[in-house]
Length: 249
Image 1 (cartoon, helix red, strand yellow):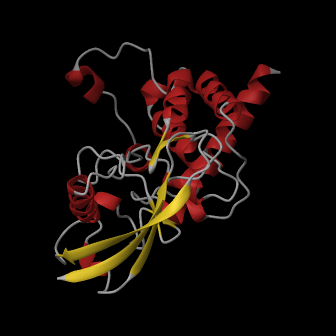
Image 2: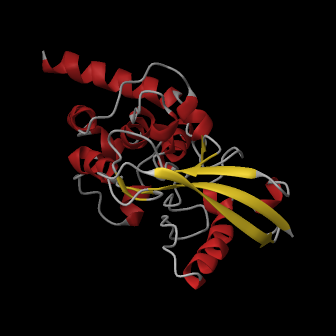
């Protein structure tokens, strides 16, 4: 069992100034996940008649990316390729002081406490992150031969869960890694090539409209990504965008 001191960001809404508040997490089991530890803290707050800490979560299996928190200055915490829900308390020590904050980005306004509005990422997808070509049933789609290198690259890009850690880690608040992953996983497949030029232009335009910053090659996005999406996909997006611009002339 361990005792911890938490400094948690509390903010009523996007217009509230916000501040850190101090909490004691007592008798925490080393095998608990980080979110289970917060559940214990919230149970005590509720017993005391206080407002519990608001935070996002859903699957708690490292799949959905909802558990977006900055822990001691690092999106999703200190472990590589790990979401907050899969971060366990055995990676902390008794007596540790832990700072917990929401994603910090202009395009991610705070809803409450540790919850931010990430719908800007959804709007990027809605702008062009899909295909409209009819491929028939699964057997018909599987009949299209795809080079293994392209299939592997498409699957690597498709691993992106849209959590926004790349945005939170980037000093510019850029969504380039997210957008690149969504563009490239379709651009690598024959079904996605028909709309490739239109897609990259629409999604890049949507990204800029949402207020995300530009990429300046800090590589923080790749380091923070819980799925290990590589910055090489950003190069791929840039190539796709240049081809689209040349084609339009």
